[in-house]
Length: 441
Length: 190
Image (cartoon, rainbow over all chains, first blue to last red; front, side):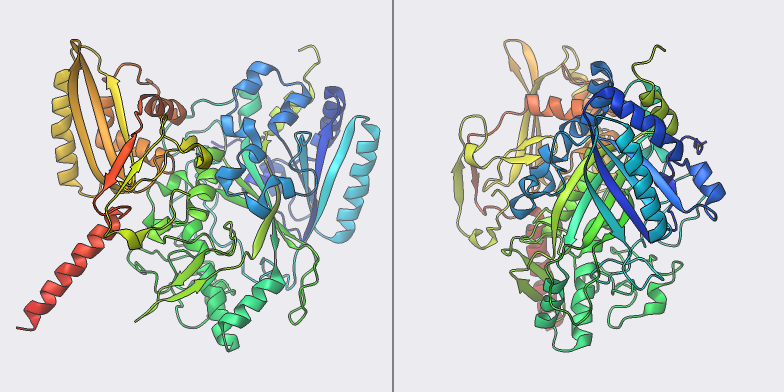
């Protein structure tokens, strides 16, 4: 039985928000950090609370900490040592493994995210801009009261129009393929696969391999917690559109190129089910838009190229142990949309996402290292993920086609990593435990 | 860069001398569980050498039959390891029995480590490792400990050779399929 009253809402629930704000914090002394935490934790929703009041709530708050942040709050050394190695090292130290090299290197990150002084993130999702501003001011007052708590940076989120469905700045429909967790009360849509054991995403429960093992200590700290990899990914919309214009003579051809990079039409319609022509009704239908596989339906990649984004991020029936590799994705877009005919304006826009899983090394880092950035994924020889892989202009992208495939050489980078971090997302009891450290217990 | 494609060179046999320690110091690539041993004309591989727990020899011969049966029953049960060849040996040094497990495969071991652990459990490959001295008892739930054992007992090559260098097993199979298809085509033309 999942402890819905203890698990932070963001793990299992999606807030009906169109805006939000992330604030990145540093604690100059443990007392200040704990004072801040004691106050903010009253606003952090559990799954149960969020589900009960989702209709009337206007804002949703989550709190998570880096390993340095746990130390800064006063967690003792033996407890700190019990966390997994990759979390202790942090995302910056794992840069090469993640493909964060060249322009994506942490040296080029913004917002002090690469700093060891980064201790915590507070994630706000709000129903509208007015509520976001109200919460921002409220948080500003709280931080002002807690001397020794510093806001390193912040990022405002804005959904991009049209607001009827979630999509990124490139125009691709998002949030179509999410794993379903056993006992979380959700029915998997066709093609999603059977519900997965909660331990794949939440600490303290059996996972796909068996009972929980090697959890951070003490149990009250780790139970109902999870790990979050944060990625701030800039999207070069002008460059992307220019590329489509170069590759396709007509709007139809350009749409097909966009679809071939993703594996879905921008409407969300999967190429496996709609190989030649977009089908927006299919893209919008959750009962149909995820219901496909590759081994039987598209083994050679004639519909979905072997190196396309969705085939790398979720190889479905063409990878082993898929159940041990799934992740939960949350987040949103930031920056103003670039109008359709406008040239690149130099303003940063992109997606700021959280990848949530029980093991960063087995789930997030594996996907990043093997699926996104292995040049030889599916024997492709010289490719990386065309959307979020580390592209330096020397790689190619092959689109299988009869009789002869299309090969694009010198694929440009459509995205860049502008920051990231590993966070631990504690349960509510663990937040209270952390807030009370240093007091006689 | 270890995985730079060199497919075009398959017709030209190649040898590679490898520095002491197994790495080229100026181009060590970091994997999730540590530095990755370089790709050579003989692709990726490892040679794990470890002392067996005294008296356990019969387990190794029983294990050989188990693996034979497992692969016969499910020919693709090791597919995820992207193997060319595996070789197992037992040999003696000063009265102690040692075990060698040598594999040649197409991906650095680091990438599919957890899949390997899962396969070990599923096929019974594990049984033999449990007869080695120092093998972690909690290996099923502790990938780190398993990987540490493998890394600690891996003896890197100082020289590797490929008659058809850098060619993957997948490419070999594709070439043989193509040959079979041509042969079939000629039959159909009679």
